[in-house]
Amino acid sequence: MKLLMTRKLPDPVLEKARETFDVTVRDNTQPMDHEELLSSLKDYDVVLPTLGDAYSAEVFSAVPHQRCKLLANFGVGYNHIDADAARKVGIEVTNTPGAVTDATADIALMLMLMTCRRAGEGERMVRAGRWQGWHPTQLLGLHMSGKTLGIVGMGRIGQAIAHRAHFGFGMTIKFYNRSPKDVSFPAEQIDTLGDLASQVDVLVVAVPGGAETHHLIDASVLQKMKPHAHVVNIARGDVVNEADLITALSEGQIAGAGLDVYEFEPEVPKALTDLDNVTLLPHLGTAALEVRTAMGLMAVDNAIAFADGRPLPNAV
Image (tube, rainbow, N blue to C red; front, side):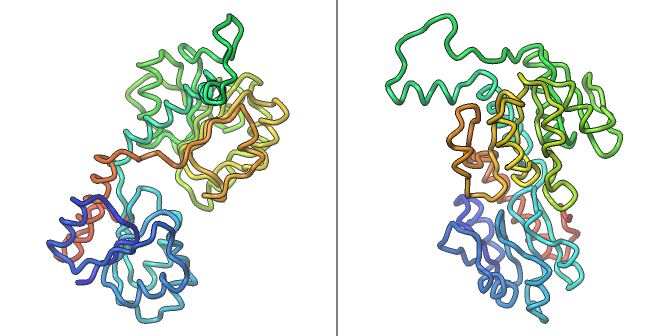
């Protein structure tokens, strides 16, 4: 079978894939364009796509007789793939849950600390040669220990963030989730997103992307937050209405934000980069070699199961 990797992955992933498949790796770090998407469905049995490879219903309908029968997504999020449309034309979709949980939760804690303690602002001051030495009222931020953390989406990643925050920083955990959720640590489920936003010092967004969560965090939510509170987004960029967030940050409705994802990624508006009270990372959520390797091996395992005619380990 022929397999297409849409981006270069760590060497152990490529080596394992080549044991079973005739592998082609795109020599391009950008998402596939429309013609490449069509060709991938025509020319390969399995595709390992990733973030930005926009397999829409229109793409599937444009290739009436697809050779491809599996999209083994590299990543837990798959909102760039219309999975329902794929299944209608006989293409299965898998993802890589679990492998990304701890690394993404770590990035959330890093962003929480960086925005609360104004670390990005301080680092820029030092690099620019503007630091004139320590004094008692310089860059006073929010002491995170013992504060209340609100988590939007209490799935694997949300729980990993909550566990770190509660046991590592003594934070009180409150959360909003679409369905009732029992967790193994002290936490209070709040009925509405607005009520959660009004009760917390830090609000972390950890929901899947997609139509149901598009602009879930908007002006109506941000206006309910306390003026000293911070927002952190490690989910998908369009879960947060970026224009509303810029307004909230610019007008002092909230104290700061930490972002690893953006609504129109990789475009980051100048209005955001001009603000000192926002920490901006280039989608580092799973950017550790062992994590990206584990993700790739999980995607390949899905592909091998397909080739062997076995049930797919991580079908979505």
